[in-house]
Length: 242
Image (cartoon, rainbow, N blue to C red; front, side, top):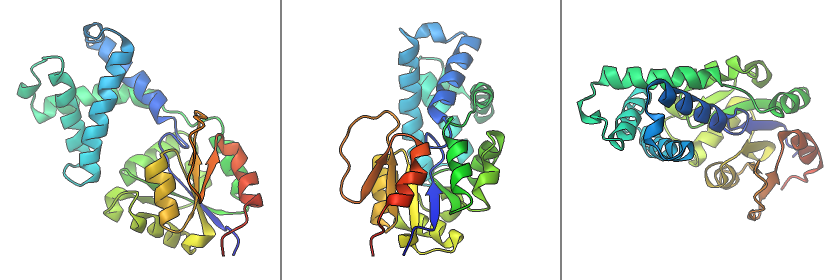
């Protein structure tokens, strides 16, 4: 059977999450007078990203709410600076995070290749999203960067589905929302294990978006892209597995 649908990851696939995160935290730390506490801006970014990865994993494991992981990220980050984080109330921590989020959201942007690729695909494929995130947040983000209208109504996120990638069930839920079986659906994401291996193991056609062109090898059943604008040709020339 031909490929008839394409599901996408959002962050660092269609949307430049890393760029907005970096702009947001550096601007916020300058505002609150904490950037000079770090030897370099890169050190601040590394700490923020490490804390995010840890606390966001707790959110995906359903140990924390979305707001709860924001509060814990703030406390853990400030604790590394000896900034009295243990005395922060939930409201104070949430307000600090909101300062960061305001700068981050101001820097929201789609990757330049995202809209052209979706526009080219939309007449020929059913399109949708499968994301490890909050549904309302991703919908608002995709709307703000001008991509939501290209993706139809298929937006499957871990908060409502109840499990996160790479679990096969969330990929299958995305396929079901498209009205297609997994072997007729391609999945595109930037994380090799979570997205590419997860999609392949769930029976979809897996595409790993290696934007940095790392040259890292991909296992059998995983196709490599460096730009989304090459996806339409890759889909058209791919011989589906029976």
